Length: 145
Image (cartoon, rainbow, N blue to C red; front, side, top):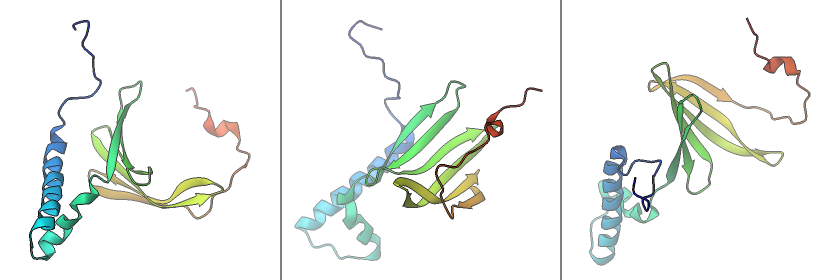
């Protein structure tokens, strides 16, 4: 690497996003086009009129020391984690979070789903949140055996 070059930890081109960028740009173009012309509002073009809204989320890729990768999808409006993707033993998992509410000042997703290879395998719902409870530390010890 040359002395003035900066090494980046991310790829320059993410192919999976290229098609999404196209549709996002198309929506923005049609939105601006409708400002200067009269395009009939059909069901097909109704969503494209919302092109001014832009991207609704961004993602953060995290790799732990063992090399496992997790992608966090974060809402650009509320800054809440909407879902995470990860892979384990060849199975692609996706956990989605819903129904965020405050519990004693902390924002908690009260519902979540877990999908394995695009099939829902678990649905969870939190009914109550209690803070300040004593928990036996033995629950967190890994047995050596």
